[in-house]
Image (cartoon, rainbow, N blue to C red; front, side, top):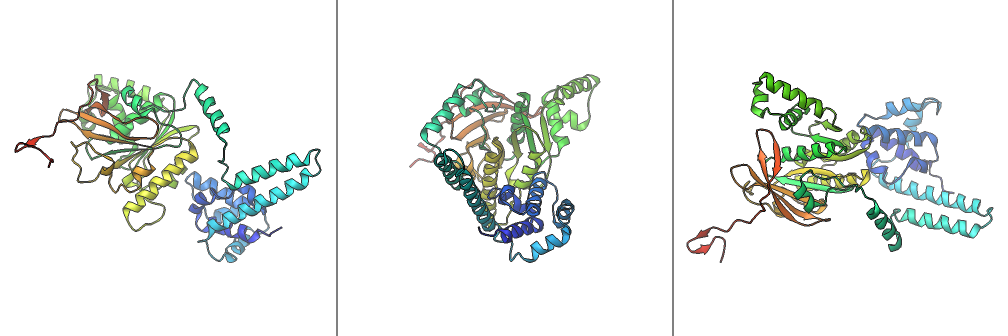
Length: 421
């Protein structure tokens, strides 16, 4: 049997020196793959701490090893000393997982030889080993059909609706593992729209996390209050409130405080920090992020375009990992007019945003009277279409309109259609 101690020491050193790496490493290796209890303990402690947004380093690791090894700090120092570089940690993790899986297979086969039907037991062990090497996602069409039919037979769907019936008839809701991009120019109301989605999900009983990189929690709760009371934003900001408005705000507050809605107002957040915040909420069903352009990448890239692509990939992976939908706002290219219907090419620094989004929605101003178009431009499970809404800026609230959307006719110039040849 191959000795894996050097790999385990190096992974222990890596999470002590660069704790954020555990978020990538845990996708490749688990504590069950470690043969040295102290190394497994450190790796598990790092994973737990970073997932909750807590600090982790060699000093914290040493404190957790008390009673497990005689000299915790000396043990960790030795791990660091024998580690040539932390740059190859992902390869170390793959090797350790492979060798641990081979050892489990070998031990399982030896144990199966003593059973009554060793051939069947060994065949099952080999199948499990092959599936593990394939990522555990290999399924026959029969298995996939069985799972699909079982999900169809469930009356209550796991999807989360937006709260807008016409829009939901097009979107078919948000489902686990999906990344939904909401694009708009500044001033169209995308933050209010995201808050509308979050509140609607929470009202349906879904634990919802609203990550705000632009406004603090107090500003968000102000918007919630004006949405559910007679007070306007101006009256609330100016504190120009009558006794009647105060009573109305108090009643709205009592209704809102029972919602399973959580705000996290962290400027310049990274995906790993969002993951840490999400880990503190039990039964989380939805994450809403306002907005992508203010997020920081985990790793520096040559351009902001590449960094946004990296962020959107990481968010897509997080949605898949947590099996919940993530809705994230994105700004559009500066060349796009806020009264012009956007297309998928309109995404600012679009790069991979379009590619990584399961669904892409756009908002734009149809007229100066508060009519806003909501376009479903990409929809992997559903169809495309447009819904007209009224945006009440005084109360930061969207309302669906009954009138169907009609594309405006092109203006004529000099007897020819504008833009024609």
